[in-house]
Image 1: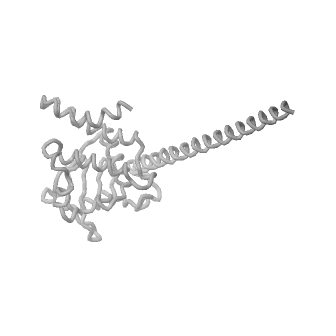
Image 2: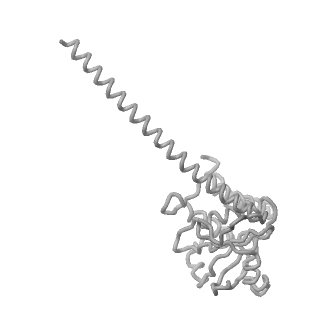
Image 3: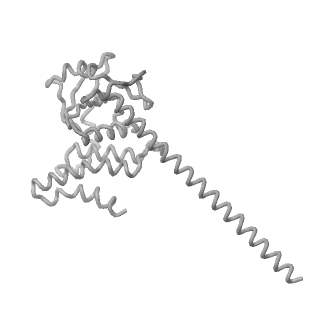
Length: 247
């Protein structure tokens, strides 16, 4: 009798173990499949963006749409050239992340800020694509949304709405950072940080995207430090590079 009970107990234990292992296996497969779909969606989206840029550069796009999937308008160089008065020096309002920034007015009356890329070559092209992709994902009431872009042969431009009250930008900047970093560096890091805290997971960048976005900034800081001979200039490179390298 005791032998039968012991045998039945072992059977139950074995059955429970099999069920638990099966559930764990199914859960693992589900998680792996979900992650695969997530990565595939990210890669597919990146591929579509690269394909669209290449298509526009070659000028062989068939049925080119005026608005992208991200509701970004695709401008022609002629449109933005006209909006800025032929990129008149009188319309220059500053220097952005990769070139001069001009004030302009579109045909529909919208006032815009237009960034004209001045960094040619493969690196400049990659930075432009990354900035378009990051800005197109931003969903925040505190940041200016990207209206559209132009990728017409060698011309790379971004169009954003003009900031109505420039004094508000100063109000949100940490006063302890004054003199340590340029406004350009602060804005670049803030834009990337805003991407990382988006409410919807699909709008958050992969860690690889974050690192790729910070690499040009770190290189710039290191180059500036070498020229100035000041070791403190490496502070941003250390603060951005160390955590990533330690992971």
